Amino acid sequence: MSYVVDRRLNSKNKSTVNRQRFLRRYKDHIKKAVSDAVNNRSITDVERGEKISIPTRDISEPVFHHGRGGRNERVHPGNKEFNAGDRVPRPQGGGGGGGAGSGASDQGEGMDDFVFQITQDEFLNFMFEDLELPNLVKRQLSGSEEFKLHRAGIANEGNPGRVNIVRSLRAANARRIALTGGKRKQLAAIEAELAALMTQDEVLRDHARIEVLEQEAAQLRARLKKVPWLDDFDLKYNLLVKHPVPKSKAVMFCLMDVSGSMTQETKDMAKRFFILLYLFLQRNYERTEVVFIRHHTSAKEVDEQDFFYSRETGGTIVSSALKLMDEVIEERYSPSEWNIYGAQASDGDNWNDDSSVCRELMVQKILPKSQYFAYIEITPRQHQALWEEYARVADSQSDAFAMQQIKAVGDIYPVFRELFQKKHHDA
Image (cartoon, rainbow, N blue to C red; front, side, top):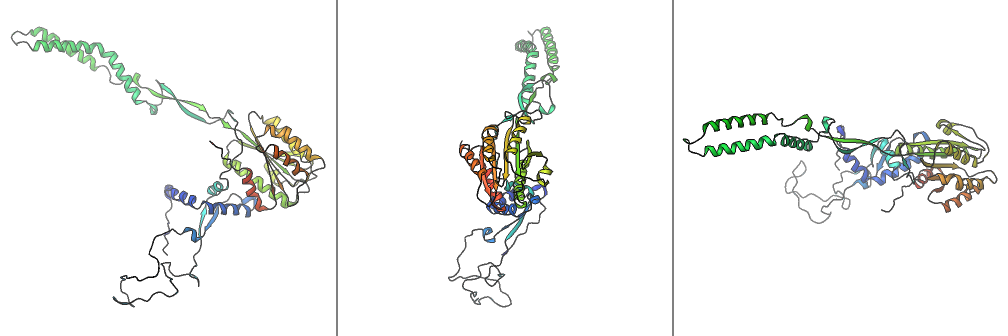
């Protein structure tokens, strides 16, 4: 088989279209490779690019050709072994040959898979494809928006690059008509009188009158030529006005259980989930703030460094995190202006009688102010009271609340996609 290796340096991204077509064609292979890579990588190495391997059988193109067998007559050039007219024996191996060249193994099928590298951007695009923040609707001006230019008619002043040629020429023509209309009528009358005089016999012509009319006509033509064809007054400009573009403001609350029941393995899975969420927000949304809350028996708002690397631990009162989230919303994020989201990770182990408090807080305080809240329970064990209470919330408010269980690292990425899967609304 022949191989064509394209070693061009892709100057000016000339092969970008071909690459995009290739990525679309093998989208399923790439998505599977991305999913495997996300599950197998370390926490801090999730967003790197990836090598994608595509089986050779999936790259082959369908072709139309003559099948093997039968009686064929071909004319080949001669060589050291054969001369014209010699009979060439059929290849051994029961219909082998076929143009695939020499095989690399005893079975004649030894080709390596096709391997190529996708960039970090392409990796993240595939990783977060078809995902969104649910129910993102509130749009508002915040004072530092981007502006979009809209046409707002015609102005007499403006940038030379925005001259409206048609309107300028129309204005110039109107000005010339207004300034020269009377003179043109006088000139037309003089020319008509001259024409009438010139039709008379030369002996009978009034030469003095003709001379006077010719002088008046010359003066009128000179005065008409002084009117400029295009004046600065005629220039018209397209008027563009800036309109602020409303932006969706969103805040994501990340609530992580760091109690003593959370093993290091469980915490690592929770961190991996929140890193995916953090990358997703950074990648897809410009104006999204993130609030990190860690809790054991008490909850604390922390920065990113403490959220992922602090070693503080203790007992478990999940409601403390929900109360702190509600307090932060009241202080800084008005529900009328912000799209409020929450994501909570826990092993489900909670203090006695606190789970029912969590449900009440969720129903009465959090969800009425939030667009969406996702709860993941990281445990291979059976569910406890917190899951049961949250399940009642999910049954009653399925649009605003979702919950999933994670048993192993391999469940994180599928669960993440399930929680933030883009919903296709009917038109």
